[in-house]
Image 1 (cartoon, rainbow, N blue to C red):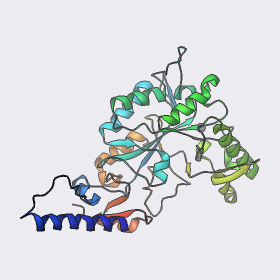
Image 2: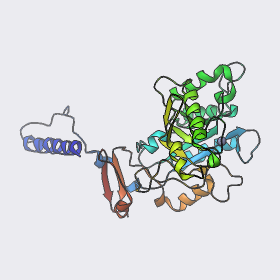
Image 3: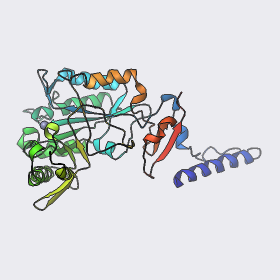
Image 4: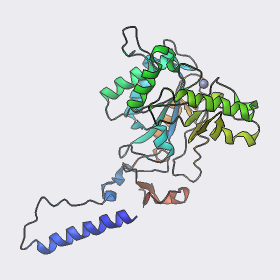
Length: 340
Ligand SMILES: [Zn+2]
């Protein structure tokens, strides 16, 4: 708030200063006039930063469409459809920390891929990136659509991320260098329903520590996609999904992702819980009317329910009737307006 007051008073000073002196002194064009960032927000775009955000869940990219496999052409179609409808990827970390940098008037989405299979990230025999793996398709789409950021998280289970051992480190480093992320999907793809504390801490601690042997220094594997979306029946053990210790290694997850079936809440919504985030299946097969295309159609008809960015991560803009749905920390500024 202080920063904003300072900007306003500076703006007033410049405006009033110019007005007084305008008769005698021409306005010097080199004086930079501070613009209040709020004045840059175009309310005709109906910004709504309390709206829903889809976390899309992919698994495999392959030749034949299956329940957990998207074909190359269908994955390309998904990206083009999202692009055309005004959706833009953000990182999972930015989403849960409320750092929404999406361009004004556009809707953030989070792309996720589970399991870390070869078809997610493959090098060909000549060492080049396979244009038909998930990463290859994403990179090419970003090249031809630079305003569709290269953001996605790959949740990796078991050993050898992306299943070409000679390239494991290179791939993980390159992925992170390009702006994408890797996350935890447990050591053995364990169903945590009947797991003990030791099971959970071993599965998550071992895997995070293992994955960090491939990441650049300082990079933390601190997001988790639950295998099968399953949580321990014993609710006292849920805390170990979030944090725990395996041997000398401690982990702490900032985001825990479920399997289905809904768009997620805005990170500024009072009920937002980063430790239980629903996802939407990015598929058209066996989606029970709660797949990606169902929600895209729904938001075409109900655009007021989706998150629409104001373009400024430090200002949270919402229609005034939704103000009691929000909780924002003091580093952010709330801006409300009457929706037409
Ligand atoms: Zn899985």
